[in-house]
Amino acid sequence: MKIIILLILISLIVALVFLWLFVWSVKSGQYEDTDSPAIRMLMDEKKKSGK
Image (cartoon, rainbow, N blue to C red; front, top):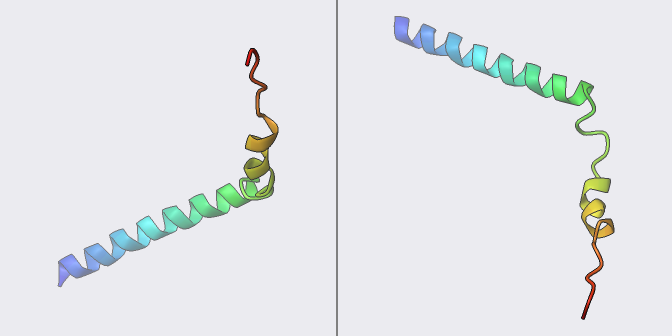
């Protein structure tokens, strides 16, 4: 029975760490601009020379 309580505590700690990381990433602006990274690869196309 002690092992179940220990596993529940460990899982709660891991869940809280992931929740904190998610909140931190949202507050730091990781999800503010979701459109331009997909378009940026089209805009940075280098012109090939010589052919």
